[in-house]
Image 1: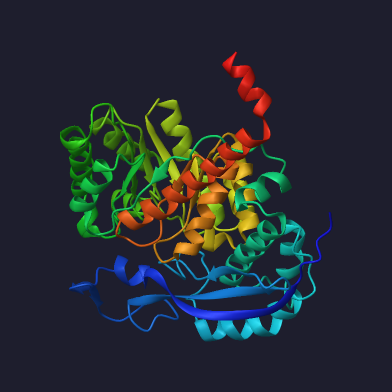
Image 2: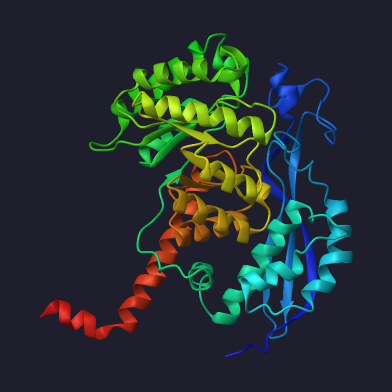
Length: 427
């Protein structure tokens, strides 16, 4: 049945992301810290200081039936790095949203999510809208479609993309931030599927030959054995922010050798290494990561390469998946833009036999995190980031609980719609 619900008005609300925006180039250069601050001058354009509070901008669609549905616009922690959009500026985003997006929203059919995204998020003056705008507006459009259909976001995705309704949760991946030891303990005590990220983003944390990083990997594995419940056996996932390449060398063979050595340190665990090197462009990243993946596969290593930097857009995701230039692709949602592209990207990875990691950033919001949980479960991604923030507990609660609520709703509806099947199972 066609809907008569339309967008009557649009409202904006400034807000805060759940962490900070950090100048990755300055941090890589080895700046000093002062408490939680970085000391020195920023290197990435747009940054006034090396660490700046993350900001967000909520967009609310006031529907003709009185309902208001929301989406959140923001950027990622390391804005302006690795081919990403520049730093999020609330005033600039507000101005563009009012002048370009508002009129489009008032002339779109919100009952069809994909069509609405194509209309509202079309290029402006020959260019894509800022990816933060795409991200937040598409969240609101998905919420609007779900409101019209009186379903969950997950059900809208499954309906529009011809997917079966999910029956199982997606493995949860938590990130430690700088409070490594205490946050690793939290993750283990909560039996998180994939841990700990580690934030290996400086020479100090990696070591001149990687010895500091290797010691940390072995400590995490040992800590799982010490305090984990019997039978708990997580995947170990470490984001090294390109430091293998920076310290060991930008040669695929040398990088593969190092990763194999790390995997041999923890032979009983599946090992994920995210961003082993940043080769400076999408083309170079594709070529060199494909070599590393091939070397690891031929050696039978239990290590898996995860791509992040230089793999930002839907086209990038498809290229890395189709050419097997990674074992797992992080679909970093604010960098991808429209959540419709995240959905398509996750499905493209699965079709290519490559791991789909529905990710994002600690700088996001509770709202965008809940949307990511529903998209991950609808597409049955291989893993989903527990976000936002760096406190561990909050992200686990927000993303994990959202998954569980959706599964409970779907289980309830199956029971309500198929009483004959229930009776048959009892006889």
